[in-house]
Image (cartoon, rainbow, N blue to C red):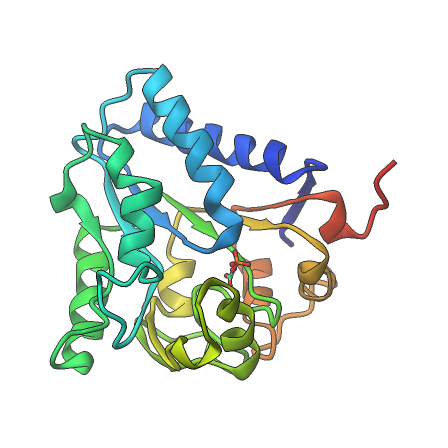
Length: 245
Ligand code: PGA
């Protein structure tokens, strides 16, 4: 079963996660990190960037693999996950070697060979020592939507309407939200040695409640994490449904 850790607020939980990343890099200078995007991760990157600077950490040997990227959204679009990573992580960390930054190319001419290339890169550089995950309102991890096979590797996914709607808050118009993405597969994610999932806010409560039952079912992609031996789920009061005092 996953360990649920209630840190009461998004800020405290993000700090905890940032410290876990620092500890991982301290332990192994050439750590391989699995990184995530989305609104949930903004505080984490902010606090991580501060801690990395404060501790003069050398990131030159660290490698990072992002979970996913939209298909057919220009890399320069402000909502591409490559742009997100630049604005929230890369531009703050001078010692990080951008050659060690990996993200699927959603504009590759041959998307089928791109998914194989990305899976191969993870295989050759892995295992991922620490994977950071968010969770969708529908229980997705990465962009693995409900019904995705637990044995999936990096693949192309059709986004659910609920995901498109949830992500439309970052775009000018819902019509602009891509309908497809490349995502690490569920079996790819599960190979990580340690996983930290962050779930904040009331809109994640339903998915979190289902995850906490311990029942494992492909209709809730995150439920497979109950089978992994090293997962921490960091939550705030709102996600757990604990009223603020
Ligand atoms: P969010 O997305 O952080 O923007 O809520 C999380 C996810 O879909 O995994």
